[in-house]
Image (cartoon, rainbow, N blue to C red):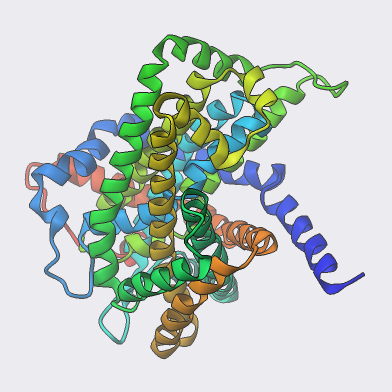
Length: 477
């Protein structure tokens, strides 16, 4: 047995565990537990998080405060986190879930996102609560920091170290090579005359200009790119859904009926349709919004904000925007364009199915719009993950290692454009899931801190003389 074959088998086994039923149950279960600990904050405090996020973008100048040269504004921290999470999974991943798990997968994707709101809230809150200043004046924060500082003794150091190793390695795969490979593939499909190496050169240059420019430049680019790419895709998808409006009732009927179907398939056990819908819906929901993986906490830790809970509320909005808005647009675009039987007969999967849905309304223009959206989604993921990998290796090895990482990360972009990456994608997918294990352990152990910080903030907000306080973890341990 050769090395590649053996490696493929090992990666497949790891993938089967980290994205299998046990881990998915743990991911959702952690969200359920945190939802109870915070008093169903995503519902009971809906007005609070809505006003503190989307409304404040237009009304609160503090949300856009960039006065601290070592921090991002609250809005930039959100867009940097969204840059990494709103990726090809929102387009290709949702389509794959529908093909593999049926329309019912969409319901389970929604359900995992509902509980994932509190998971992401907790990650962002803890990131700000436990962060500290690095020697260069920048904020050092994220899952590795709240794991090491919050989980005492050798266990905290072990969990924080493992998270960093998995995050750094995953950044080259899921956050770099696989994404730029999608960009190169989309462009060459539209314009075959453009060689992959030329696309690689351009991507290396524009990635280097952003990544080597540091945190401030990353924040400036994501602040402009993320709202534009999201609006382009949302508006394009809404036109598809409205154009097929007469099929909207059928689409929702298929989603809810197949989510709880006890029907067997191909002589299998009763309930197999429901189990497939649950498995692929939850997996793709988590893969898309990254709630529980701990990655986005590194972006939230950079926010120019005093109150940790205020940044946590942006985490709630992040899952809402990523899954309940963008992923839903993809799902309904597909399901209003084709019924479930037609989808199975078409034999299309991933981005091709989404392109077919857009093409059914726009023709070739729709496919071009979707290809542009895919390129923007993929590129934004590269930018966001470059920062995650940098923070992880800086935490482990220091500032010099972080600078070397930025150069290597930029160069690796070329490799992603020139090579076939199925094994790299599989390895990165497994590493991405492995990040969740230390993070989930930490979230469960620190759920009491999350609950106390939440209660403290809400009770103080009710008092007439409320003022913002720069709370730290020492106030709640």
